[in-house]
Amino acid sequence: MELQIYDTLTRQKRLFEPLVPGHVSFYACGVTVYDYSHIGHARVYVTTDVMRRVLTALGYRVKYVQNFTDIDDKIIQRSAHSGREYHALTREFIEAYMADMAQLGVIPADIYPRATQYLPQMIGMIEALIASGHAYVSPVGDVWYAVDTFDGYGRLSRKKRDELIAGARVDTVEGKRHPHDFVLWKSAKPGEPTWDSPWGPGRPGWHIECSAMARQELGDTIDIHAGGEDLVFPHHDNEICQSEAVTKKPFVRYWVHNGFVTIDNEKMSKSLGNFFTIRDVMKEVSGQALRFFLLRSHYRTPLNYSIHGVKEAKVALDKLVNTVMTHQDGADATGESLAEVQALEARFWASLTDDFNFAEAIGVLFDLSRYINISGGSSAPLARLMDVLGLATVAESVSLSDEERELLRVRWEAKQARDFATADRLRVELLDRFQIVVEDSKTEYRWKKLN
Image (cartoon, rainbow, N blue to C red; front, side, top):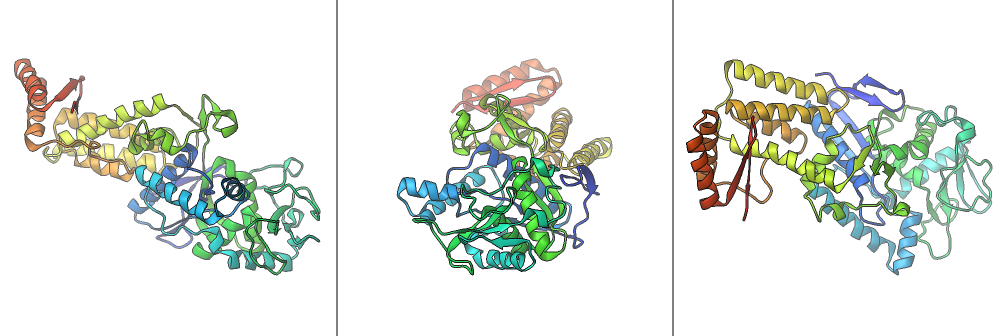
């Protein structure tokens, strides 16, 4: 199947053709580990997780790299405020991040490079930029990228030069030649962690980190670079000019960005008081419910978050899980039934190969679920497609015995045959003996255990 990916750079869907046939190099900008990860992060990494799963299912060998920014102004400020060493702080939040992702069903990256482990690579790139005239050293030892030396700067964001702002994360501008230049190396400040460099002690700027780590682990040109919409400018624009000024090669073949998470249609922000960590949400619902909620909207569109919406997503996901569990022993489809199942599977893959349209693919899952409930066939095709999206196919913390499953099946068949007396009798038996409540609709039923 041909895969079409919407490329932020060209603003259009393009046929996916990796640099090396059969192999995909995939880089996603990771979190800055100074606090617990929030639902905006959840959207980024659930999105890239499903993209990775789809690519793998299509037969590609995917190398997925996601960094941790473990030195940064915010980390230093949090470290100073808490009185803890920065590396102890970052280790705690890396561990917390990994635990959150496990709850969301996100497959770990192949490599998690940490910025502090790639200082030689960053210094090497900065030296090359200075030697080629793309960067300069200020009198105080900061190194700046000279934006005017790179043709087409801002082409990813399509910002005009007079609209651009500096990408530096520092207040000082001493020795900075142009307001749009951004920092590559920051000279040492009292009380901050520092590393040696040809320009004196200091630490790297934020933007050079990803360029160096991506190049080291994936090569000069990578197939897919992903991140949130907020990273398009300045971070990804800056990555392009740094990397391409050094390698003289295209940095990325396909740029992929997901939309913002909003709260009551406003961008989530600590300053607005509408900020939710993944852990906040999972006090009320499971990671699978949050994952399903995140996938029900197209990844490029804004997503309006509410706990009510996540709880509704859980109810919807439970319907799919219920179908899988109820019809595990159903007969494999044959004849016309097989053709119908295959047509639904084809629609599912047509959605996913059309710029990873998870939302549309989930709609097909419900169509398939309804068909299985009506036909009584095996739920194996539904379970297989749910697995592609990383959705669990067993009820959380609930399992059915063979006897319970058989009673549910026989009761539903009686209901379909309009043998309401038998259906009602078995409904009462399920409740009295097993504390299982059954609810019917026209095309399916749901069950839940009270204990």
